[in-house]
Length: 101
Image 1 (cartoon, one colour):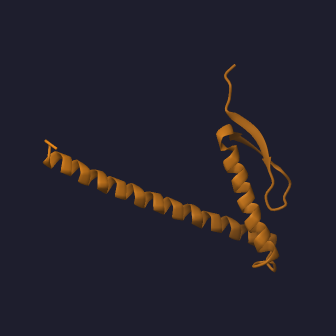
Image 2 (cartoon, helix red, strand yellow):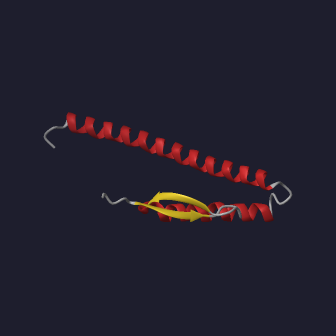
Image 3 (cartoon, one colour):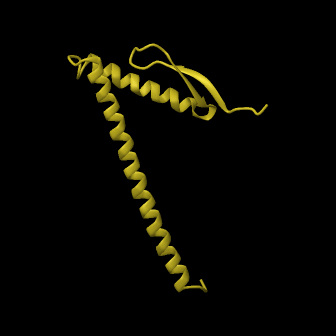
């Protein structure tokens, strides 16, 4: 029987009941960090900035905030990939124009 690199964990978000997840073993730490970040922001916003809003509204704001952060990360990665491609092109042109160096 083949071994799997998956394991079952449970997470708890925003005071809701525990949620089971099946994750890659290598991703467990990432999942735990994500759980902690969501709960930290949730707690801060439900007791402070957005305390007067419904829990659903606060969770919507938390989801929106993390989506914005994800999209900013994607945009940064695209910019890095574009710069990498431009730099590779410059290096290759330099090598092609100076083959004896």
